[in-house]
Length: 283
Image (cartoon, rainbow, N blue to C red; front, top):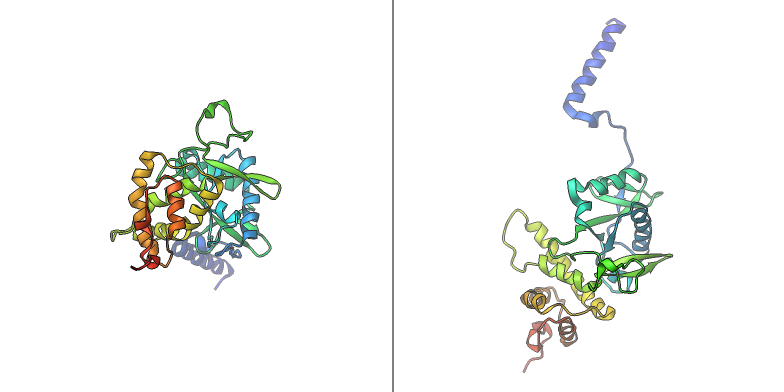
């Protein structure tokens, strides 16, 4: 075969393979990144420290979720870092977040399993998953209102109660959503009897979050002195709390009189009859 014919033949083969496999055929081999499944307190601090720098440089307001209770010493497993942002950040296909990722390409990667991570260990090619939630939706806090003593608070915030507090992570002050508001969000998404639907796996995920995190969030809300829910909110949450107690009881996560008193301090009218059956004294 003549040299020209060989070149043409190879070219046609490449075109055919490109047609079969699309852009992946020509994509160079790039070592994959991995997400850190079980976050240590050092993993959490490193990710928050880095994220806060990027967020503030990008003029993005946010508040961290349940990870704040972990920072405060509560004991539960953390798989990712939850971040509450304003609806505008999630608008147009989360255009603002994608823009931030493009501005800081060295810090944002997608793992082989499709997880979007913030790279905290570049040498090991590892990072922490970030999970963004839109304020005002699905039980999330309605807005970002700074603490009364914060320099971020302005006259425009009026007398509205704070929705986040500020804690130190290394030399930075980072916003943490109030634990009681995260409890409300977890209970809103909790459904003890989930119907068999396409979204069943998602419901199981929400139920697991509620089961694992609410005991620690409840303790943190009392430690932080969160105010009670309004009477209207408390009335809506009461059946959810009772259903959650029954559900958690089945997973050996019991509610005793101490926890009942914690709920009552948040305005939820549970009583001694709501103590978990697993630890209820027998007569």
